[in-house]
Image 1 (cartoon, rainbow, N blue to C red):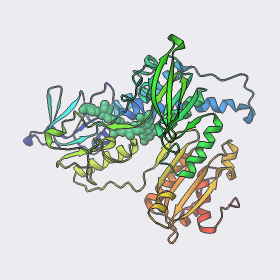
Image 2: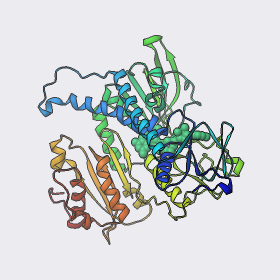
Image 3: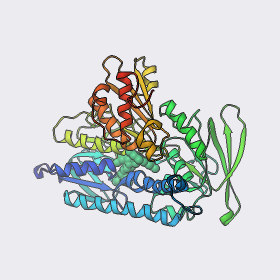
Image 4: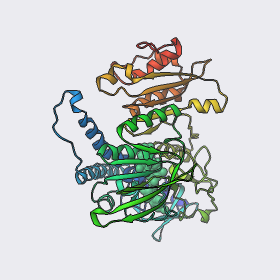
Amino acid sequence: MADASNNTEYDITIIGAGPGGYAAALYGGLKGVKIALVEKDRRLGGTCLLRGCIPSKAMLKTGELRLQMSHAEKYGLALKGDVSIDWESTVQRKDKVVDGLVNGLTGLMKSRKVDVIHGTGTITSPNTVTVDGREIRSRNIIIATGSGTLYPTDVPGGDLPNVITSDEVLDADLTLKRIPTMPESVIIVGGGTVGMEHASMFNAYGVKVTVVVTSPRALRLVDEEISRRFSMVVKNQGIEIITRTDVVRMEETGKGKGKRLMVTLRNADSGAEEVREVSHVFWAKGRFPYSQGVGLDKIGLQTTKRGFIEVDERMQTAVPGVYAIGDVVPGPMLAHVAMYEGEVAVDNILGHYRAADYGAVPDVIFTIPEIASVGMQESEAKERGIPVKVTKFNFAALGRAQAIGEPDGLVKMICDPGSGVILGMQILGAHASDVIAECTLAVQQGITAEELAHTIHAHPTMPEAVAETAFSQILGAPLHANR
Ligand code: FAD
């Protein structure tokens, strides 16, 4: 498809090979588009594959197993003694999982005839990306440069070696160099998704975990009832959550293996300070978009105050032919959103108009227990004055949940009271990350509670909880419980 007469080598040059960039390349490759994929890292995969979604879930799995084994007798298993974590083997397993997927992705690029170019890409004109002095000409450019981790540069002691982030825990090039042995105790600063997922993981490893959040509750973007119930469950697991508090300074004491961090916490309401001693501080106060140094100024593109690149519904920037997707654009910083946006951009580049639709974006928090949601929350409906009917179903009344020993959890369904159309769903509990798929389809397709309730659900399975909340919507009670 590339047009030699127009002096373009490629149809699309994609800058960044994270989920946004690699999905756009794979999708375009299937459609016969000639693509150059520029990546500054030595490996493909971006944040998600190299230091995010995948390595974090690989490490979490080890913790889940340990936690389950600590309740082995509940399942009739006679396990003697404590199941301890072998940190080095756990890290090596995580790296092996990532290696396999990176190799698979690299092979796929070859089979889709995508030219992978390693180096830092800078836009020098709407049709040119320069990589180490080499000019790559293309009809279109997709900026998929993603985001980076915020470090506590403005907090005294923020540069101490035992102050770590998800990069140090998860990136194969860093983990054992920066964290040679398992932390003994961690203060996690920030109660968002990354902070709480690591809280669950470290706690399941047997590490003493304290979470410090400035807001009145952890996971403040999650449905309030679900996040409060979650906080109770994790408190019972041994995680301490300190709210309305921030870290004001960190100091190092001791030497070698006895090295510790003295962390000063300050309460936002009373101003009272207290000092805690831990082996590590895990900083999880968010991420920033990678829009600096991409050459946006060369094509007259400006960013928002926070550095995001604004796009229209087709993912096109203010410069025709230049698109942007993923973490570098405003919106949820999620791998599946980045992938979706990559496909939308490619379709529009190919002349098939497609508008990005964010009405049904599933959001999963891989904590123990998991949290998943899609669509409207009860609080949002209240704020916007939208009348809704809310029904709930507790996992405790579900056969499968009892059979697998996971009765802590619930499903919430938010419907339009007139039509019965499902507007949103939230789940707390085991396998929420899988169960949300059905809910996403329901919200995306605008189906009603009645249609969902009358869909045959395999028994015994966790998605039956979704059907039960739908029965409550149409009959006033679930089928297999009183309320
Ligand atoms: P990125 O994945 O950040 O990729 C951007 C790529 O661009 C990088 O490889 C970078 O090296 C490259 N790049 C940047 N600038 C240039 C340049 N000038 N030239 C060449 N290359 C460049 N999301 C989920 O959906 N599910 C999860 O479970 C999940 N878990 C996460 C856990 C953690 C700890 C973290 C930090 C994030 C997690 N995320 C998760 C978020 C997810 O990783 C991101 O939303 C996703 O990676 C964004 O994809 P992207 O392609 O926009 O950017």
